[in-house]
Length: 373
Image 1 (cartoon, rainbow, N blue to C red):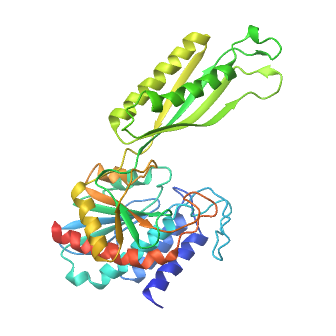
Image 2 (image 1 turned 120 degrees about the horizontal axis):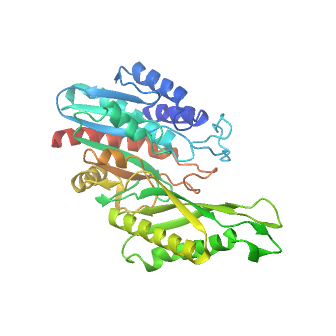
Image 3 (image 1 turned 180 degrees about the horizontal axis):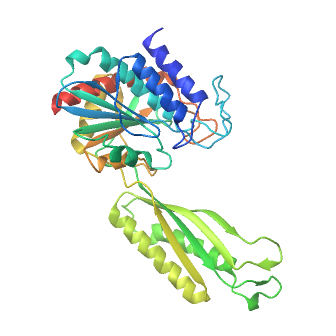
């Protein structure tokens, strides 16, 4: 079997058996089996799911990371290797990322005696719920690592295209829940109550002005309300309505500015309408900030290996890889996957032709990065 076909076969097996964040038990078992069969050292970290492996020897060390979890999505791609786990799908391409890094591991194993140091491979669980990177950091997976690299497939780029940027790349992710408490009443006698639905409707509209009127137009910010829940029948004004949404920015200063403005608006509405409005914030990953040097280096190696390189635009999605970059320098890159449907879509279908070239790229990147340390 050819090198490329082996990686595709592994990807398809992973795709058929997706597992949600923190539940990647069988995925972990498969990875251990495949790595062990290739005589690649699996390190004895105490992890419920996920695998850390290592190739090479010596004091210089860098890391490569792949994420391994899937999403709670019913697959409709129609591929012959569709998910056999109902309601769960690799709709973000983590099966692609994993097969790429498995391929890089095989290439590096072939050159182990010539490597000028060690390459640690992090097969990380729970990226989608933004918990896996912290788990690996707490376990010590970054100990003595000088630089780290990772990837995400990019459906909007053709196969053979590569993009990254130094500095901020992916956004921080904040989730918020706003609870509006008014006074319930009969729908025919609204003057006897405080209509939480009317307050909520106006609050949503007001929140949309924050990004457009309170933040410098040169700063990136998204503030989206994604859920409204309230009421349970047609003729009663509900006492409570709940909103949920997300805030995305690339700078901490903007993040804090927007949070403060949301609080001010909510307080103003509560006073004006004689209601109570409570806001709870849930922090996701911070903004992913690539090291300038390693981002430029990653692009240079990509050009050497035949990629058409681009300067990536800012990405408003969140990425758990950001946690690693808070501890050590490194670079996160995009590699074209040419899917007609985007990430997290039930018909997402990345082009498998990206896998083998990306595996060869990361093996080369790892070896050359060791030479730079």
